[in-house]
Length: 110
Image 1 (cartoon, one colour):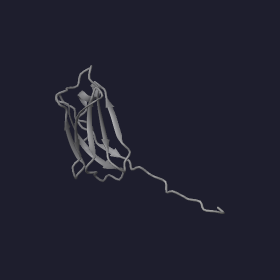
Image 2: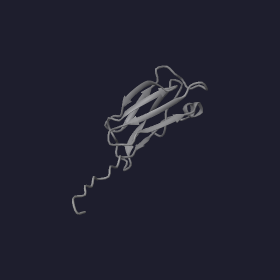
Image 3: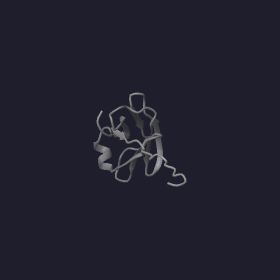
Image 4: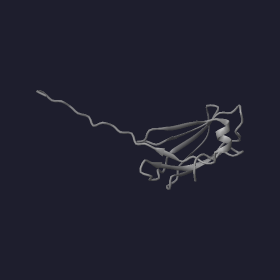
């Protein structure tokens, strides 16, 4: 699999991994058409996902976007032009972990 699959039936597929290349299971993947939630799925144990629109094929008057979210990672979002949606075939996504700085508490006399 390579980048984003969006054929005449608006089918999207790919693989979701972390920065080290490990697959991430259970990522919520949402396809939006003209800003409205169209369909969603979750990535499998091997990080792969497959999502199909509820009947919207790419055209000049339709905007598509895909989001991928998982607790502990920065949310991913990509908007596609009608030209991108018509020619690309898959979308591999890399999620970056959220880094939270440790809490430091200063005591008296610090």
